[in-house]
Image (cartoon, rainbow, N blue to C red; front, side, top):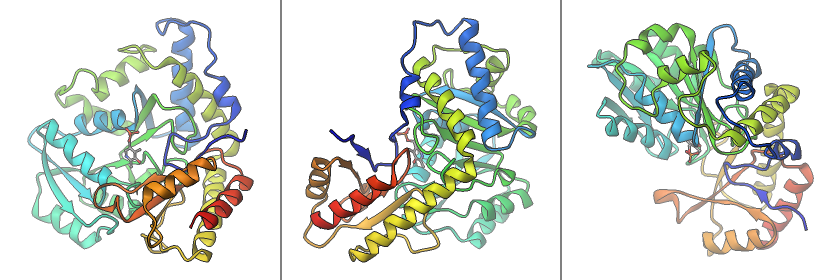
Length: 356
Ligand SMILES: *Cc1c(COP(=O)(O)O)cnc(C)c1O
């Protein structure tokens, strides 16, 4: 029987090598074996993205939101504000995390899929000197929009602000300009091609003195607490051990393929799929030039419900993804993250054409 092909934005299809890494002997995370593994993963992350010189890394067990909550809750100094740019579910999630921790925030609210204008962000920064951190979602997975990371980062730098980016669904799939970022958040189970259970924060080492002065607001998700423990080879809490072993192998594979190579592979897959969608007469949610390499938002064909489309594709071995919120009745999403072959993409287009 052919495998199920996951066209949802994570968890993704992984290679057999990554899957085999889950077959572990019994292990205690307080032993040297795990401590060495963690040190290796933290270094691999920096090596893969070529940021060893200026960045450091922190691993946290949990899905991407765990690392996001860690970064957001640990990066704002008392009395200052975070500017949150919201144009989808994940930007709104950053805003929610601010609210849960009772952090001051300014919000630039846009329509879902609407890119922010640099002038509008600049106006916020001019009018609100209390802003210390600017937060952006790089690839807004809600729609497939790639937000202008570099431009926003350069603006934040010009105004002396800290730039925090949710790169969870873009890291290793789209080009991330680490030079203009101060704090980046990622996860194992999207374009990095590992299993869910471990996520990470990558941040510029020069941020450490400022971060260390911020009072601890959470026991489990304190960024500098984890960093200190991990630098000393320890873990504060029991980690998701199997997910770490799989991440280690996934990063070996990423380093072998190279990040540039993977981005190219995903871009080629997206182009191939999009040409097929165009030929079928499907309509795109996001205009060309603004789309990520990793996910395509499409309007549902007339007269077709998402449920019907999903179940017919699933019966043929393909899992697609629904729209969220107001978009749930209008769109569907096709991700091309993970270890998927060209034959599988070809077969998918054939099946989709038949179903539509
Ligand atoms: C997947 C994703 C997250 C995290 O979602 P989890 O369910 O915690 O994995 C956060 N931000 C973006 C942009 C995402 O795509």
